Amino acid sequence: MNITPDSSMGELVKLNFRTAQIFQANKIEYCCEGNKSISDACKESEVNPERLIRQLEAVLSQKRPDSEYLNNLDLNEICSYIVKRHHTYVRENIPFLKKNFEKLFKVHGEQYPELLKIIELLNVFTEDFTMHMQKEEIMLFPFIQGLESAKKENSPLPRSPFRSISNPIVMMMAEHQNEGQIFDKICELYANLRIPGNSCTTYEVTLRQLKDFENDLHMHIQIENNILFPRAIEIIKE
Image (cartoon, rainbow, N blue to C red):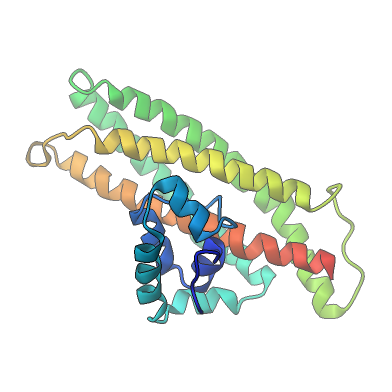
């Protein structure tokens, strides 16, 4: 793929997920603003577009099995993959993060009052994102899977529980952006604490947990925003 300043970030991440790491390293929001061009994104983040394109080209020169795998799945399989891989990851890891932050606050809360703010933000994120995943699993994903089945069988599309499929998709993407910003704030606050690692193993463990969760969240949102949702809308248009 020939990368230009007009190239879409979402298309690049869809082609190879490792490009997401490049955008992330340059503090460029790619999850919820995937349709934005490289040029516009660089202007907002004050990044040199030529340097960024060189970094992206280096990544795209290497094949990424995960990207090829997801692009070859149908919508039914992608929905199942998101639930089994990413929704399960969120549900399994949130309790560990909460427990560690509560432990840190108990020991370091007096010296680092920011920990209380982090706990409050994590509670908001947990409540909002849990509801978000439930809406996808109960309403949106089953409908998208029905679209895929109708396309394969050349049968009428399933009756929509929505006025338009664009409505819940727009809502899900808005929630992605809001929840992503909440988690980014958690990571920012935590990174600025600077609790000495040699005096608190929990601090170091939680730091790695946060980074891993952040990477998974970005991947999770990218798959929905730039692969699943556009393909579902395309079936309706067809």
